[in-house]
Length: 490
Image (cartoon, rainbow, N blue to C red; front, side):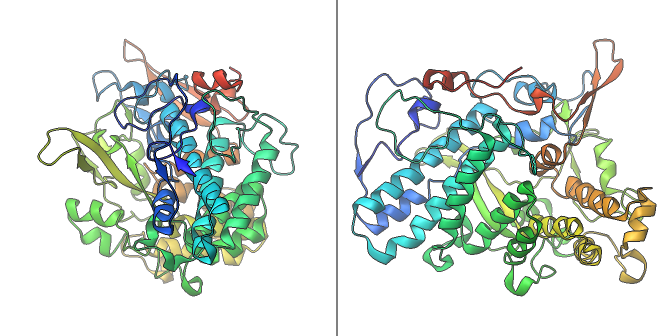
């Protein structure tokens, strides 16, 4: 099988060339450049089956991890201000929903090309890990698409609203019609690919395993997937499988110890390095996100309080790094921007970051929530305490450990189960600030988002985005209509 450019594009939905800096509509049939006829070529192809754009801009801006700092403070950036106002973004700028949609379907196209090449060549057992990776990567891209561009999965619901096109074959036509199916059918296909792929994975097949879906990374994905589906025991089982012997304490981010001692440069390199145990899957993503240190809507003086005293049940501050580019413009500085020059000594090139797609930290919090849903509050609280022991400054098990009763009192929630779950969600809110995880919890749990807004007179008002609002679903790119894909209602 031959491959168009570096990967077969999902032309009908993305109308995109693989060139990093220039996109245009295709008006000719794709040509064939590279024949995938060796294991080495297959392995290289599968490395491109991951979205190479980030979702940080629009998910963080739309969530309650952003605030309006007021007129004259920070930069008005359209790719941030538009999702902050819960408006549809027009265009495919870096960091936009359209750019991420395109990147996901390009990744899916690469996975499909790899799977077809395996079917048409006698690669033998050596191809099985790559087949497994392609299946899981295809499932992951569709999972992110359906959660961003379709109504959220409703546990025990019909889920018969439109999903996203689930593409399982390489593109052979410039324009081809696609059916969105339903959220239920999309989830079923994701689960089928995930289960089939996980059975074939082998973490020893790669030079740098953290850039691939290893068994650990796939287990973290499965834990997140089943959290959305509400299959709690599966969340527990898969989350536990993400770290050796279920030992999370030795494998999550050492926020209040090692990472806190690092200087700025050393910190953001370590945070996304492949040799860190807490990073389960990293992706190279073309991104300008770390440059946005001073946006008008973003991480500001109200949100910075999340890391201070009295925000959490211990009454103590956390050890997270908080940097600022002039108050009230803050950043977690979790990403080190890297730069790929198109030619040696060239003044231009491609900025990118290493983005954690899955971490042991998220897996632990997902397990804690699943334990709570199963009624195993002692286990849930034990996971919370493991997490907080690596976050709180001067943590003392004697005085700082959580109990269900303590959390119930802290949040003034008589229902201890709900208090434990609220603790988990609030913990994830501050821990994964500027990582895009909060938006997934917002849609999954039906949380109301409140944004402040300043008018031209600098008068402040507040607006809400509640569960069921159509604006909680990002708009599908206009180009998709060429393939008969209906846009989301507004």
